[in-house]
Length: 393
Image (cartoon, rainbow, N blue to C red; front, top):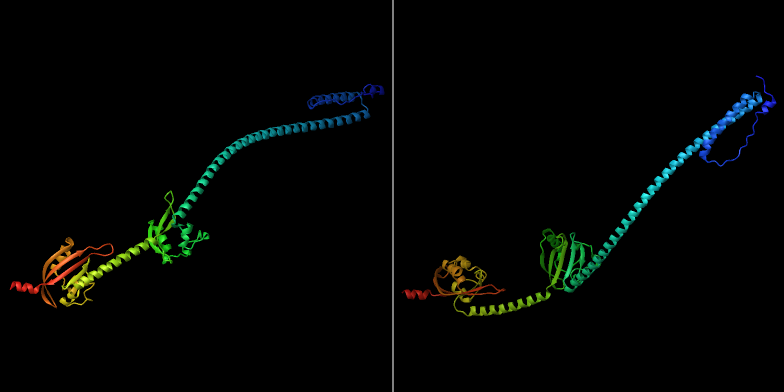
């Protein structure tokens, strides 16, 4: 093949003018491959018409450069597609995050409404609790004033015998101060005489759940009724004990005065009785309700030859080594006298060791006693042995 002339080469030269075109990616993706294809076709046609080395080298260079551009364009296109996919994925992730945030926002709105509802309920409960605290404070004030107004010393202890509360009056009986709250009862010093058993008494009440009432006395001489009872809640749960001290000093003084008056009266009565017993010439015995000798006159000691030490305080049936254990006398004292206040002229014959056989006429009277003195029995014995023998003769 003959080499083309310069004129023929010049006939194949082209002027290519490149200008910026405002193409978007889609248009570029559509136009670029076709332009490259067209350019490749033209170059191939030129290469076929021009066969010299320079031209061939230029064509080869242009082809390589075109191939490089094509590969670069392909790579850029792939990167663009990858970026597009990544952007699309990011967009989807952003949409998902947005939806999650919307859901979270809705949940927060719901939580906000629930918190507002809870806040309103708490406000209502707080108001109710405030009212209860006010009522409880009022009840507590009423209780303190009631306990202080009654003047009854009161001490509250728990099931471990620790001090819970006490009234001001209690400090006069047990040495208590405000800082003693919580201390065991055993650690405190009281003004009670013989109060060593106070702890044991409280334990006994808590163990048996049976209240106790004990009369105690302070070192100053005041008398109190100490009551120990279990501390019960409204649900009947035992949570300790309550100890109260009721002042009975005035009542005790009145009782002592009454007792002294009765004793004085009884003393006078006994003195009168003793004078009567002494004055009576017949043997006379004064017996108590148990038939023990309270007193005997001198005539009795002389007539029956017995001593006062062997007589007073003895059961009548044991006098003289059992000489007075007489069936007729037992019938009189055990059967007849309890039903009748008085019996007269009851004859009885018995043989005594010291004075021999005697016939006696018995007269008895039962004297009713009172709360401070038991019944007494006056038994008069008249010896009618001589009169009986003369009558029989």
